[in-house]
Length: 96
Image 1 (cartoon, helix red, strand yellow):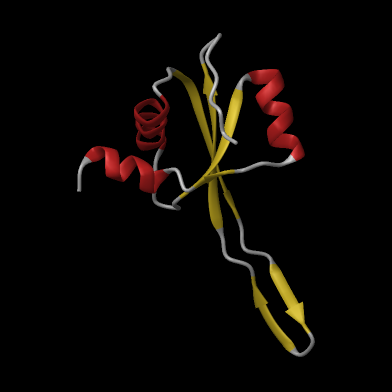
Image 2: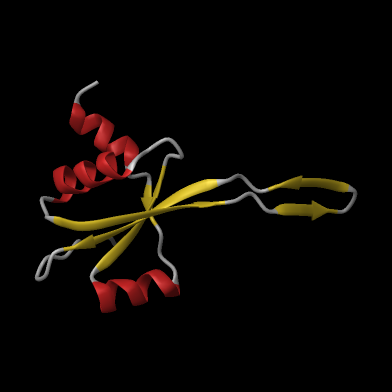
């Protein structure tokens, strides 16, 4: 598997929420859903390879599983990881 193929596996999809849209406008930061085992260096390299931009900072956080219940059945939503990638001034990504 080439490094470009791995880059596409690391960036699963963009997270489009009200808070993420505000970060795009205010801090030039874009939010992506990434695999739980991805680290900041891999995320930085993936964004730089795919979108041809320069990354200033990468912040990651794990979204924990939350309990869900439907009638008698109980379970939980899956845990996942998201990365907030801040770009250098004057650079943008067209995520839509």
